[in-house]
Each structure stands twice: as structure tokens, then as C-alpha cells.
Image 1 (cartoon, rainbow, N blue to C red):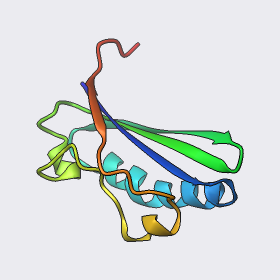
Image 2 (image 1 turned 180 degrees about the vertical axis):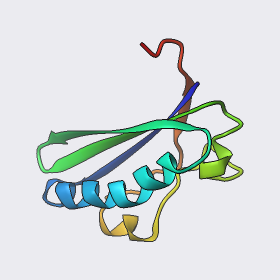
Image 3 (image 1 turned 90 degrees about the vertical axis):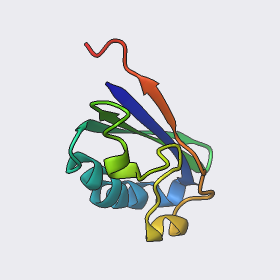
Length: 101
């Protein structure tokens, strides 16, 4: 199993709105993509910013392109992301999951 890790930062004032948006876009799209085993969204608020980690789990690296496209290292963004995120980080990380219980 593979975990795909994306990081993004919003203003604290947009945190709740961004989370609702992410559920309608990235979470929904990941969960409905063949090979996806689940999605978790984490948030850490520090000062006036909210840091988000989006972890999606996949059967294998070969299934990730069904969501991410050919270049799986490139972050997937939606048109409205620029209205929330302070920066569009260009890449994501992938790790092999060694222990899932």
C-alpha cells in the first residue's frame, strides 16, 4: 500500500471553508478513484495560518495515476484552490505503508 501526502496552508480565517471545499473536491475524487483505500485530512492551526495534510492511501504506485495523472509527483490542484491556499506547493510525497494496524 502507498500513502500520498500533500501539504497546503491557508489563512486561519479560511480554514473551515477550505476544509468543506476539500471534502467536495479532493476527498470525493480520491475516494471514487479505483485503487483508493481511503483519505484522511489533518489540520494544525498555528498563529494566523492553518496547515493541512491530505493523506490518500492507494493499492500501489501503479494505481496513483488514476487520480494524479502521469506525473504522480506533481500535486493535484482544482481551480478554486488559489482562492484559499497561500502557495500552490508543486509536489507531493509518496511512501510505502509498512504497518497499517
